[in-house]
Length: 403
Image 1 (tube, helix red, strand yellow):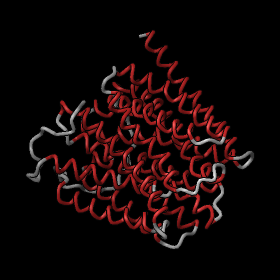
Image 2 (cartoon, rainbow, N blue to C red):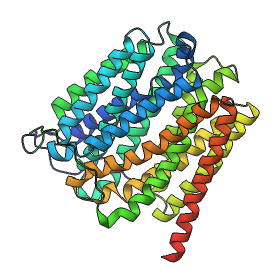
Image 3 (tube, helix red, strand yellow):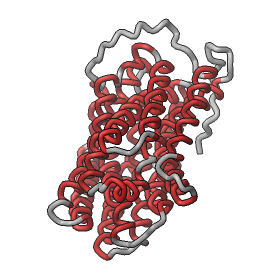
Image 4 (tube, rainbow, N blue to C red):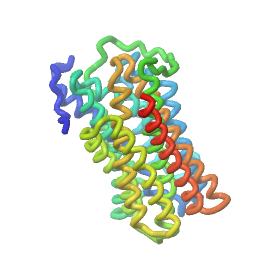
């Protein structure tokens, strides 16, 4: 199993690269935590602000728009001005989003906060991944990519779980999670200022959005990677869209911790999937991951159809392992193999693709729920994403036979 301990020389600041990696990873973690804090709280917002499933879907959609916009428009910014300034910007946007959530809850403020949260996630996802990989030596890039995905998914999972726990044990469930995240963002900014390596040259900060490009040498691998990891995110999108409201409306669960736990399990077991991927060949891990998404979606549909909890939890676990396999191999065959000056843009292009695939089924569930109900909509889209996973797996088998 790979170790995360770097073996490079000290950074330009003269400090150990381990401190730079720690500061960068912590900023990455805190930013991603902030993006999922609202997830287990949607049932509270639904009561206080009369949110319907469609409203929740719209809020998810505007967040995804923010993510994809940041990735697509500013995905190569860190390649131009350096990682550190863009990391600071992402943390600052996360803090602004937390401040907006601390204001009195209204739908317009909520929408703006989610858009800004999406922008912070988009900037951090592309730049944070590239920054962590950059800090590892050439022969340890795989460990860097593994750490980047672990921090990314770990932050997403910890955000939902921490918000759910706080909501259950405090009398201010809609303020304390964001106040805690705001404080953590301040610590993250301080860590970046002290430990993160500065750009080798003074950044010009000319706003020059450039089109994301994928090197011709890895375009085939890139398409495969986006389809595989994107399918994992598509199943995650359906799970996220239905789980919180399903627990409260159909299972009568009053625990917000449980709502957070479902999503947390997914991202926790994504880390396990990454460890498993290191013990398998690239082709086997990718195929196993895509095939695993089919029962994950099937278990979700089973939970919705029979209004039971156990298959929902099992779905989260299976989805996590399968998604971890897909994400690990996808990064290993794309972002880790390009030169550093291309890494930020390629990382952003990769995550832009999979976030689009995350958003589409989640939005579709909310729209369809207007004409049926949440359970039926979730079952339909579970079937669709299961078919997508099976299709990607079949395409890989065909490609291997032709190779």
